[in-house]
Image (cartoon, rainbow, N blue to C red; front, side, top):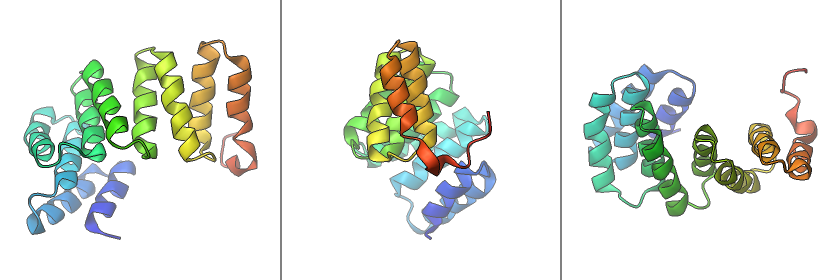
Length: 172
């Protein structure tokens, strides 16, 4: 596993300090690694250091303006800054740049749902589930969006995708 992969893993586990350390290791070897810069910005923003996130995010965007991951990371920084409309716009850009990336569609769906833009949330989460049909969490969120839209058959179909692979879901 590369240091960048370790940084992503540690961030998803909530260990932002270690994730930032791995980003710094990558940047010490290759200072123009856009993904490491944008992930560093995410770690800082998620810790509440939004101002400290700005410079690495701007540098990452200038180095890789067509990167889906950098655009997705921008959406995280914008959300942490309280700029939810800009966050969803960055997530839209991320799905446009990386239409085959599961995480970009999931992020867009979640942000659209927060803005109560349930048609967009439903569309994004449906794309996400097409990419990983066995992802129980996405199926549940998609079902929720469809319920709000009163698409009961669609909600049921999303729930039907969960199946036996979701043994780790809590009991009702």
